[in-house]
Amino acid sequence: MPNPKNKHSKARTRTRRAHDKAEMPTVVNCPTCGAPHLYHRVCPECGSYRGKTVYIKENAA
Image (cartoon, rainbow, N blue to C red; front, side):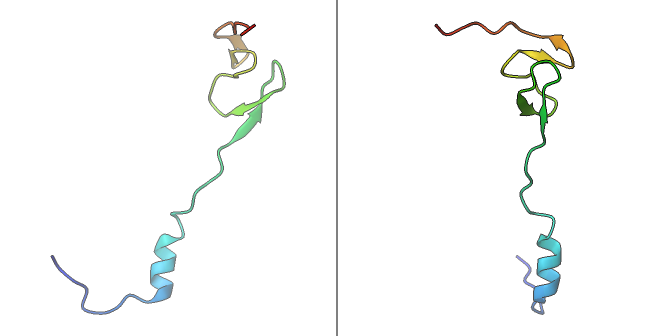
């Protein structure tokens, strides 16, 4: 396996790794019930997506 002839500088290494950071997921408020949920996903509280009811949530009790 090939090995580098010269050592990479800290600046070069850190510049390459600058894009490897973890990002926070985008959270939005549901327009129907106002509960926060992940972007482009069905609301876990009311079961709606883009203003339409996708599924009806059943009560656990």
